[in-house]
Length: 60
Image (cartoon, rainbow, N blue to C red; front, side, top):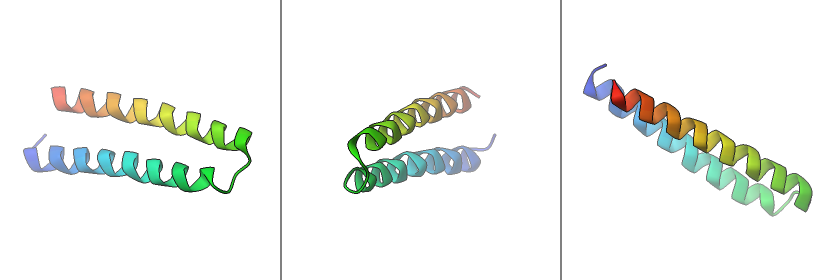
């Protein structure tokens, strides 16, 4: 994979994480607490998976 493509993928993953962080933060203000906690846990799981993908791609 070329460096440009690698940087593009890294940036995309970083954007997905930060956008998810912002979305979860905004949803916490409008959702009931239990639903907010579920959304937060779902996002945290996604972040872990995205970081694993990024790590695997950076090994290539």
